[in-house]
Image 1 (cartoon, rainbow, N blue to C red):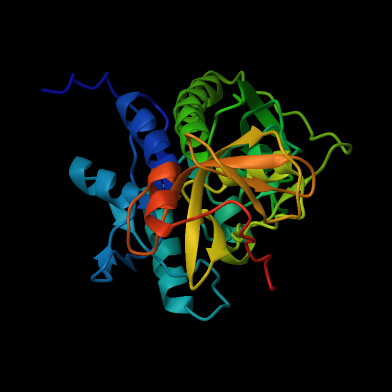
Image 2: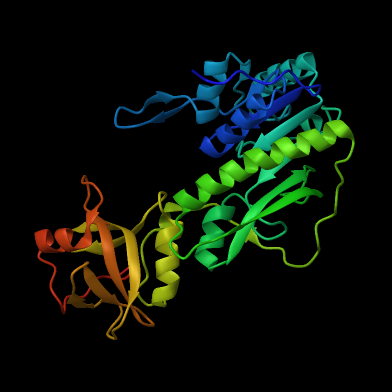
Length: 329
């Protein structure tokens, strides 16, 4: 049996978000006792083997708690779906939120949304702004080898993550972190920090700081075309990419007539032509890179499951001396 919620707080907090990262924040806001008069989330999408329509993680939580939901395809009144945008506008106006909290929503917020709540729109962004503005800050921080990342609560404006910073919390990145593990820690941190921001907003103590002009980087959206491993790159770069692309899209490498997913690897000793299998040790194949080598420790065959790379190597008959293709080769 879940614990009772605290007494209702003063702010009316509308929410816009879609995936699990956002669900964690919505749950934290709800459990903190804030009234959530409307939840915006993206339309249901086909997923799974049957490609049946699936509700977002945020929608599932909102349904379970009996929170009102709107799922417009777009919020642009002059766009392709003006009727849906207008309906969302009327729903937001009717619920009269003091603030709109946004977390990984996936739709652009036009000016009419940004200006509607009394306290504006607060975004939970998974980086230390201005580093890694954009769609994939967790992936790109891992891929770049950053030592730390964090959560920034930002006052949204019409730019791409350019608004003033309100609160910030830091999180170290471990040597074994993957996007999945770092995502979960940052989601929890974001939930805690947005509640703090709402408490300060309610008390009138929340202060905005403009983002520095220096240190701006962009976390471009992850593309499946980035998945193939380019063995001409340094082993350290590829090892980080493998961790950054877990669980999506998964690093990959072609071998023969099939493409293997590479889910885990470690740096190894050895030199050879890029893509050459140097040895097969107790954990898996050691593959030469542009600098150094990688020991692949977890692989997945098409239609199969993640498995120990040594077992997959034995099943496929991988041998030292064979050469794996480069992307486009």
